[in-house]
Image 1 (tube, rainbow, N blue to C red):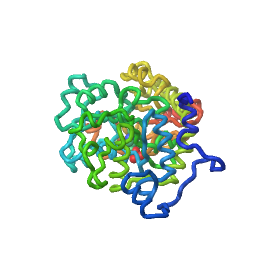
Image 2 (image 1 turned 60 degrees about the vertical axis):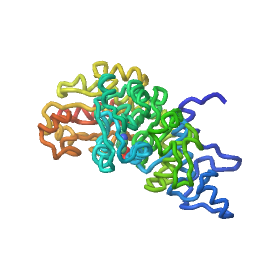
Image 3 (image 1 turned 90 degrees about the vertical axis):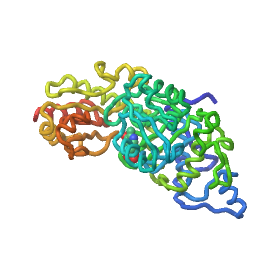
Image 4 (image 1 turned 45 degrees about the horizontal axis):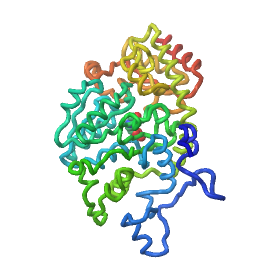
Length: 427
Ligand SMILES: *Cc1c(COP(=O)(O)O)cnc(C)c1O
């Protein structure tokens, strides 16, 4: 059959029931799986046969949903994790170890910044952060002999910068390492980083993929394109025998298409156990079934709210790549031709106090530490996630005290604009 279009994949990919089997993905609520002989089970432990034995490593519900996400991203293999944090940690730690180094865009989610710069540093993994807007020369200069991966976000949360994926992929490949892209904000509906040269794609499925604020989760997809054996000495975990699996060499046994995800499941899921519950995977799949219908509406609302705010006398600045004046508009036209996402940020005149007054008067948009679900929500970093920082520190971090992030949901845009307009009038 011809390669299906994206919407069809959102609805049907990953799970095809047999005759008389459940139409909806079954929730396999079982920790363990039964075998007739020890020999049968032994083959699973030796990775000689594929199948299930313990849900800490793999569960069929999760695998159906992971296969759908892999198909949407155009990858060859995928896996679910308990959260987006776990997805990014696993994707990096699968190829990095004590003594390795990562080149990362400085414009990334705060949780990921902390994961790499603090927690992974304690594991002996170094990092050089580069501006997403750096020149090819500056990017090249960030690499070291021990660099093992390059990391960035398609649209960064919350800065809303757009990554020049081709530029980062070229640099990574010139140094024999993969590019890992967190594609949480656009989702594969609006951008498929693998088509632009990314090797591994990660997601916080907690955001638009679930889309209803119901289940925390993450996903990793492998493009199946990176040739680990061609850079054998850089990735010994994939290209030399794994003693904890009877001497299997992942890149030889599972090839480019399967090595990364198989190792990540067999080693990291086994040892860290950041599995997504099958219940959450089921909820995630309900979100995926309408992802292609919801994303255009989030974009429509984001664009309308950004345009309204940009023309308003009480705003200083509006960040939204869909606005013609935005510094990332050209990159957005290239990588996000159908729009990016529904998240907009803006600086209100009057700083912290004005932000507080504005948000207090919102009736539809709720104050939440969340983005990317069906209900519009907003956050003022200066009075919440960054409240320990002084006015000066906030300026230096590029987070003015009056900055407000609005995640536009699926309501009617006229109502969102009316709500924001009446709250601005109170300031
Ligand atoms: C939220 C988020 C994460 C972390 O995901 P969790 O599911 O909250 O662990 C990672 N990357 C991006 C871009 C995010 O927005």
